[in-house]
Length: 231
Length: 223
Image 1 (tube, each protein chain N blue to C red):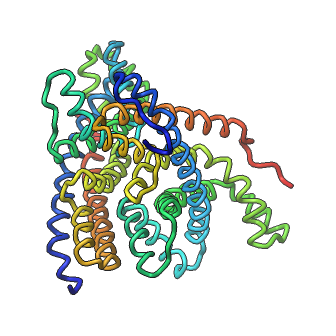
Image 2: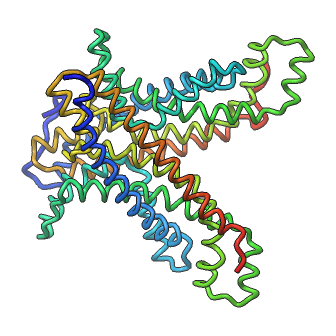
């Protein structure tokens, strides 16, 4: 029994599969929540890193480059353990879900920073020159001229990371986040039948990634190609 | 324990991580070419198998695949009367290789399709067989284009090997967890481990650059 839902182990695999489906769907909700939380953190952190990387001061840009490279080249699992155990040693106690979302956000912020940077660099040079000619401040140029044109270009690439994050969420089960795979493992541990729950998780994952990819394509199609409308 | 006492057990783990990375990357590279070329086959059955493989392994989570091979496959084998219990190292290499191979297959397919059509027209004009076209025209031009993506995938694979620690394989991440349980010195241990992974990734990136430069010569080769 999990989440107050009992399973049926005595009437064959199909009955068992049907009885654990609602439990796995509970897990799926957590998977989706963690995906969205991780994606949101990565989007914000990634943008910050992208901006810091493009600062002309080497004392700012170089450490940022090293840090993002470090975040990108180390395993999510180890980053997650680091956050989970080390923060606790310094008396920063985060719930497991928050730690997991933070680890996902940190790892993918490094990837997203590169995507943002490419998008920012792709904005035509004339746009910056025009902003300068109009005497816009650097921050205003960035938020009102550069970003509205850079963001729509990078949406498909960012969207791919949404799907990647979703596939990395199961790692969070090691710090007791009850997402779909964690739930399936508990069911397996208690019923000694791993085949049915793990296969179902595989199938549900296929559906989730297909839906998420379709969603990303839909959002991409809706965004204006030449930039967001000016206010 | 002073921090340098951790280095010996962690280095033992890192060696397992290196071996896991090497074997699964080689397996992944083989699968990439088999299914990447298979997806472009004229034979619909080969194409269907290739697409199914790529979609299944790209569409699900690596950890799910790893657990499936390790925990679920033996039960599936039982049902059909086969002993499919895999030792952790086999399950680990298989899951990592199958996963990275699916991503690599898309790279291979993309690079072959990116070879300019006139090259294929020329091959047809010169009466090359399909096999000759693949080996002498497509691949020599496509492989250099695959290398940057393969470099990224190899680093991805190195990072993914950490997941094998969850099926009790004694790699770097596993040793870190063991040491932590024993000493409770999380900060030192995990800092060293992160730096070790970072160092291995940098070495791997450099090696892939060398490989990239050496196959880059094929690009302009006319013989």
